[in-house]
Amino acid sequence: MCEEILRYDSVEVSFGEKVVVSDVSFSLRQGEILGLVGESGSGKSTLIKAAMGLLGTNGMVTKGDILYKEQNILDISEKEKRRIRGAQIGMIFQDAGASLCPIRTIGEQIYESMRAHRKISKSEAKNHAMELFEKLHFKDGKRVWDSYPFELSGGMNQRAGIAIAMLMNPPILFADEPTSALDVTVQRQVINEMLHLRELFGTSIIIVTHDLGVVKAMADTVLVLKDGKKVEYGKAEAVLNDPQDAYTQKLLSAVPVLRRSVNT
Ligand SMILES: Nc1ncnc2c1ncn2[C@@H]1O[C@H](COP(=O)(O)OP(=O)(O)OP(=O)(O)O)[C@@H](O)[C@H]1O
Image 1: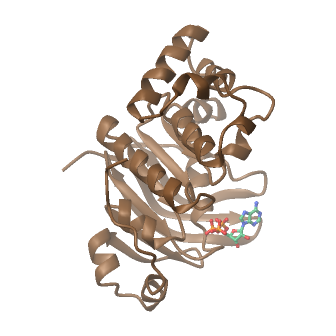
Image 2 (image 1 turned 120 degrees about the vertical axis):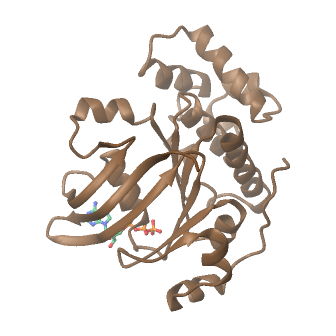
């Protein structure tokens, strides 16, 4: 069995007085893909933002622990948190294209995000990016490097966003609805790319989605959230094929067909 890399222990998150996530526990092993599902507002994003220290001014973890490699990351300084974000825990969002700066090329943005964590020259950053682009089967990596986000398709921007998140080779990747803004073909491509990253680097991934088709295609384990509480948690096969909870059964009734595949 692979080593445990992340553990949530009875985590409660509140915004002001309002508790939005309560008593959630789970663990993530090296190379594991965990699907975090539930309807809108169930607390999926809040749960992952809690580990990143990105709950904003009125949000905080009010109970429990979040352990990264056995260290409680709720106790560490803001400086240490910044060191973990990006380099240890990478993140990709629903619309990576929108979070890219529109007036700077992808290459400039890659260089800047790498330089924030280590001393590196622009040509070293470029070489590193080209290697990863190649591993991810980008057809024309040099063009992506030189392009502004508006010069690339939405799908290509999203793939570039994943590559940027992976350039520091973080052991954990949080992917928050990474495919929901994409059409089916690119969605498939992005799913395959994340599976490929896990194969190449042993990356552990938490994928937040309301789409159980994506979970079916990717996840080893599934955690179902409802109103901030865990309603079901276990091996993907068991949760998806034999859901015990009525809420999971309801979610499962609207699954589009998307089979597991590693071909690009
Ligand atoms: N900054 C905030 N201040 C106050 N309440 C918040 C804040 N962020 C989230 N919430 C509340 O926390 C709850 C969980 O929200 P969250 O965004 O985590 O849900 P989600 O499952 O990720 O939803 P979606 O699928 O729509 O992204 C919601 O009731 C939401 O209104």
